[in-house]
Image (cartoon, rainbow, N blue to C red; front, side, top):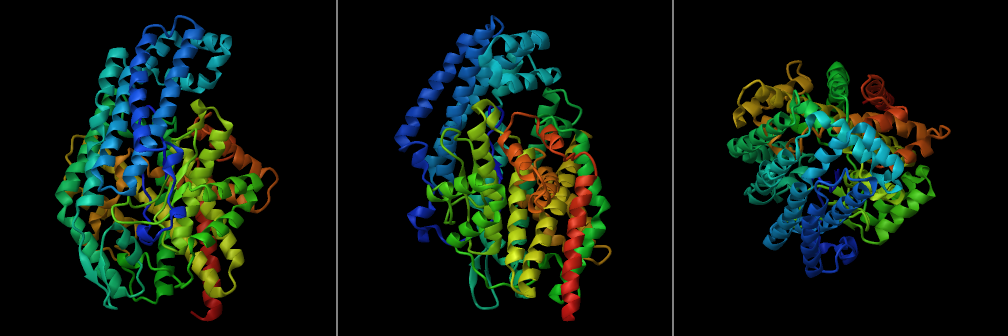
Length: 620
């Protein structure tokens, strides 16, 4: 997951992971936020100075069309303010994420977002006045003033969205709503990360576990099947108690999306969400078509899982147990070495930059009480470097998550090193290509290192589970998100109970419940309430489309196809200088067509062929 700072939004996405207690982590395993600001007092001075600079933008209002030089000066001011805002917000949000219970850092985060809101209001005149220039005059200005070159893509994007942009007064009014626009996601975060009184369960070995989100991630794959069921029943039972509240939160999120699509005059919430990155709606539809058309492959995997686990029937609480157990541990030092070797096909410059990040404390490694769960890469401090949040647990899943997040971090590092600030920030649509590419290279490296059939089965099984979760599971999420938005667009209401029914039906269809492939207990259909991504507007589909794209890139790089490495690295270096769909299409991957998805499904079936061959050879 990538975290960015832009004028339009400042949001966080998470990918859940778990690890050792933060108080056991040495200082070298904590990120060093002093590289952004030396102290909270320094941050406060920067935040106050930034507010004054935002106020000074008024001097450009009404004058963007005066001449090319005035437009260039205005753009330089706007983007320089955004650049500093990235630092201000990054410092505050990451300080808060270290311990979400600390009120003072929550207040800092709110104050940072207040600058974002103030900037959105003050800068509301930019888009209408650039639109007033028109395409022909804007092109003339760009041709006459070299200082405008870094802002060409930004200006083109504004002109592209002309039918959906209000006048200056309207844009300023819309900007005043931004501070309350995240109320639903804020409610989700505080309730799910801080306020839910998590249950305790006693496992078969007598261990008592406080079952928060991190512990659930750790124990849902327990070797003992009764333990798995205890974990699922207790964890989802607690979420069920808050079904009404989470229902209100998610319903409010959907209503907010509808309000903004109406303000912007889009036919649907989906078209509004995709327009931000200029992604054709056919991409989203192609993904859902590919996923639904290949549920037989998912069911093949689930039946193989049942075979390998030796179960008479597969139930939902059996899906996270490793197909082959492994007692192998991966301390953080070893993980760093593995990533460095696994990603060597990307070249020495890439490896050297990653080693520098490891050494210079770009990463916060271990979890602790109050620390934000999950993992992310924050690239918003353009002038400093990316930061990575982890919750590391010394297992292979943690190594894979680390590969994922450092894919984002290195993408940001390469883009920032190559692009000016105005075109460095890339869209999430292409961001997840870099992260899932790293996971693919890590897997291929681990398979070459495997010394036994059991090791091969472990990594192959891990690969299958990654494909299930990143492709089929995210596609299911995407279908759920589209469904609930379309229902409200047609005038229907959403309650927690209704959302559980909709999600449960999808869960059963994807996992073959009626065909007895996987039995889904109705109690687990509350899972929708647990997913943070539903609060960020049609985000989840990008995991699945990106996996399809990265699989093709990774295959070409690993096979040593001429120019493949440079082609992929060039995509990373391009940052946000092109629209993301076109950037990938120019690199040979068209995600509106079936070919990338078919290649991904073929990879999944090839892995299963390999596993079944190993099992047959061993008579299992």
